[in-house]
Length: 303
Ligand SMILES: [Mn+2]
Image (cartoon, rainbow, N blue to C red; front, side):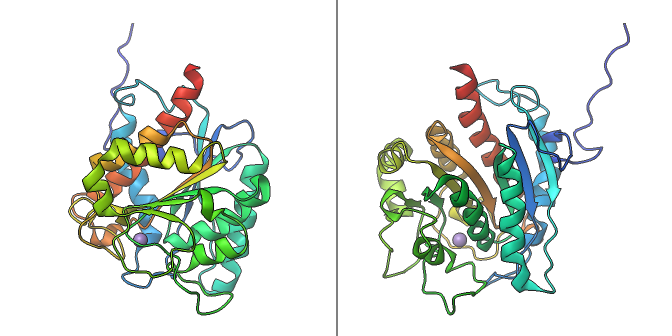
């Protein structure tokens, strides 16, 4: 028998986790989609390159099964990489509707949407598609920033105000929502519970998991992870870094600990590889996506 050709983790076409690349999500359990849009950034741009960076580094993650569960993303679940959707940055006022329409098409096929940003504003039009299907969701929001500052207009394209829009539109239920890792000042929490970065350090990740699960209960939930929730030591490649954040290990413990909840979608945003070193940030981002999938779909299939 001929020996199998060795898998070159450094070579070949870099889809996310070496998954099949197709825009047809019919029959898929999970559809990954990149949204390479970053003009809502208030600080350093560059998150449009985030999906590409996470795909590239994810080939190393895909070489082995998930640790410690043994979950195999390529065979234990049907997942596809749909590539990067088209965003017409030269006509930015078209982008919000384009993202919502694109995600609605994916959700209509029954696939669980996992979006790679792009800056964090892309979560807002994604939530419009998610809420149209599921009603107001409990937002589980990892970030250094609340992103609930006051909008400057009804249509502002700003990665610091979109969750105010989402609350006012009824896309998310603030009474069931929670933010983790916050360390920037915003007088108005909009009714969302905050476990700031200091709370995480003081109480530990097991208490964070317990608090999140208590807050969201059985409500349909959406997980949004801004990579700047992590400390710049662990995620330097991002647009608006803030010192004093979580470690990658803390984030893995929390995301894997809450994965069994009733989530209906997830995104990971704000990876900007231009400012990254040694692919640290992209690796953290792709790893957190992998951890979520293993926790959510691995445990479900084991039941
Ligand atoms: Mn942020």
